[in-house]
Length: 300
View 1 (cartoon, one colour):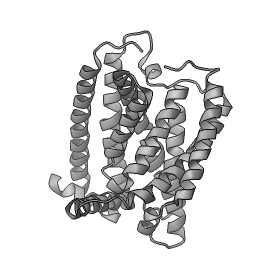
View 2 (cartoon, helix red, strand yellow):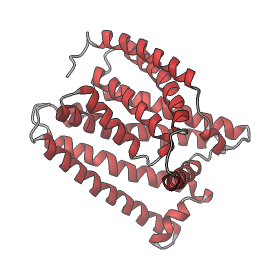
View 3 (spheres, helix red, strand yellow):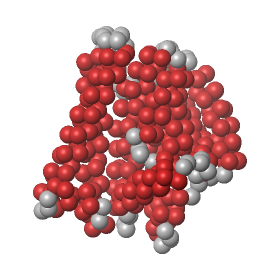
């Protein structure tokens, strides 16, 4: 896709769009929540964290995320593109070239889960000064409270709903923003594929506001970024992202059925050896994917 504006201008413009639509999404979430809960605007966040309002919280947060992530990506791509591509094509929504790509994506997802789970354990041992550590723990607890509230699943219907709200929809929204929109910008700006993907992945991890999951999400972002770069198909990145999220949701649902603690399940990580095995799976799968996809698409 030909660039209409310089990369610094594109970056400033995109960040401005993100800021505006995040504010709009949060405001609409709060406004609609206050109407549904019959409360003041400032009372909405606390009330949405109550178990009784879990269903409403899922839907409202989903809507806010859609506004904050998808609208900026579409507007940015629409304004910035200069060639004959449609916005949908420019975002990477195209037909998947073959069933082997899906198979390799599943294998890459498996390796990515093992690697990110192992790095989550490494992240626990990173030294932080006491003051920063307390702040990180407080931020992590806020994140966990939100996730635990959204992860309440008392029936099969709740599980299916959670798969959509916590696995599929975020996978679509986040991949459209980070892989389809932000990653090409940073690759073009830095003129280096790895640097562009790593910067995008750090941004992707940071926006989740979770220090103890920072390394694992950064690694996941790198794997997703490489998958999109080598295939140019955002559907495959969405599939991998969904498989990762769906595995977590499924694990939490099984833990719920067993009557165990969801919070303890969220804190469980994989060993370093699992991460090394994950790297081997990723190496094999990406080599196979690159050889196959090279016959279907041309790299950037």
